[in-house]
Amino acid sequence: MAFILPYHPFDPDQHYGPVVGIAAALGWHDSGRHQHRRHQLLFAQAGCMTIELDNRVCLLPPTRAAWLPAGLPTGC
Image: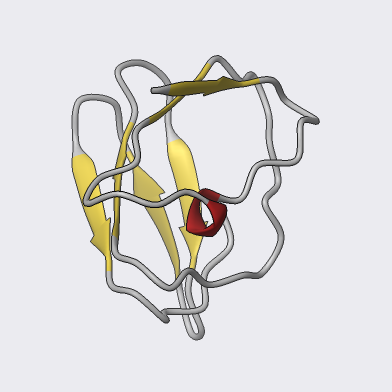
């Protein structure tokens, strides 16, 4: 599993395998608008994540998960 720092460039689409795991300890992070070739499962053990979609902004509370289909433009 990769561990990334707040300003470290990381592209999970550059890694191959059936599953890519990412662990990050971030107080704040803006991924910008982007999309991935593979599906993503987002989870925060503590704190909240904001997920920006085309026409809405969603709040992901701690201990909940969000499924992001491949190709979906998002910002987190």
